[in-house]
Length: 410
Picture (cartoon, rainbow, N blue to C red):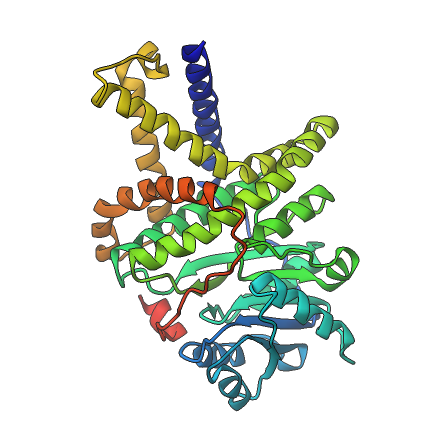
């Protein structure tokens, strides 16, 4: 019976892996240029910030230089429980510093929910709300791209999240490789197939009427994934704008990265528990492939956990217990299948880097350590499973001051 269960689980994981690989192939091409519209939509640009005095000034300068009519957007920085000079720096740039102090409800999701309530009370109302993090830099045409999608009927839009410091360390390079892969072979593939895209926590745009209609309501540790699920449940599918680029700072050290990813996985478990089965049932009942795909994405944290547990079990059985005592799927398949699976994974990451025109020799050299980054997700996810009830937000410090022209030159 144990053999049947183990082989069945491995078959399920293999099918999911093949599905994701086939889906990624649809990201190898880009659709023809979409329609362009004159700037008409007004934007409230929200910036979530907690003690970001080292980097927020660069973003303020960046937002002043957007290629969009200045009268059509205003910037509001949420100075959330700040104990430094973030608010003063924001004001020195002529932007709106919105100070929030609440030691009980901490975290980005709560800060956004508070800010939206303040926004709805203001005399001026905007067509859409755009959200950035304080360490970001936006491409000059970012709001023009959001305007194009809104005028085309989109209600929730995710921009292209790039990395502003991929050469700083092997861990920032690993983040960069992951994001290039996800943008090209996860997000763009789903965009090309007219499926729902997932939100990435920054570079997001929301139609104001939608936010007023369903509320924010995303206060978990992964508010972006939570809001994605809420939208998909209602048949509102976020779209991906490949040309709306922003650059995000990645942690420099493995320790900081592990802490950030632990928070993500803890939040993913919470969202998976809440939304997986409702979305799965809706997808089956409505014969809606898009909702089934999003349910699978929501359950990805359990897929990672299960892959780790099965791999560990097989390794211990064969290496330490003089096994095999259990049946494995690959024992029934030719050896070349294993090599093909490995080659497919290598191909997808390399293909994404080539397609995204990554030129840095340093980042390519760091590929040697990329498997360490990937495997490290396993113990992080395992630990997150047992600490998933931890709802305390952990802040990632940002110190890398980079200007947009430096990023684009690199």
